[in-house]
Length: 234
Ligand code: CA
Image (tube, rainbow, N blue to C red):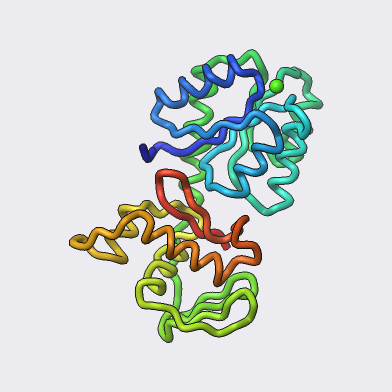
C-alpha cells in the first residue's frame, strides 16, 4: 500500500536487527524497502526514489561509507542516516564528511531512531521547493517546448509528443524532486471520470525514458516509486 509518511531504504546485513527495524518503521506507517549489501543498496538507490536511506556502515563488499560517497558523487541528495557499531569521533566525522546527514551509534534507542527518521524526512520535504515551469524547459541535453508540444530527445532528434504526454511531463517537472502520486496524475492528466490502468501511466513513463534517458534501463530523470507514483529529477 502507498505510504504518505515516506518510503525508506533500509540497508542492514544483520537479519535480526533488519527485521526488527523494518517492523518498527512499518508500524510507524513507513514503507520499507530492504537491502542487505552495499551493492543492493546502490542498485535500489539508482532505480527508485526514497525519502530516506538508513545505512549500516559494516556491510559485505561495499561498506556504508563507500555507498554514501558513491551516492553523493552521483549528485543524489537523498537523506542518509548512518548506523554504526563503531563509537569513535573519527568514524562519525568520516560518515558525515562522505555526505551522510546524520549518524547513530549502535546500540541505539529505537525511539531516538524513529524521531530522527521523522525529522529527516520532514526537513527534506520542506526544502523541496515547488517551482513553476515556463513554456520551455531544458535538462541535460534535452529540451521541451510545452506550447508547441515538441521535444528534443537525448539523441538530439526533434519529436512531436501527444497532449497527454505533454501534460504528464509538465506535471512531473513542476514537481521536480517530489513524488507525484498516481492519483494526482490521473486527476490532472486524465480527469476524474476516466480511469486508465496503472499500465497506461507506466507506458507513458517508458516512453519518456526512451525520449530522454541515455540508458532507459537505469533512468536518471524519470523514476518509478514503487506503489506510490513517479518522480522527475533534473
Ligand atoms: Ca553490519
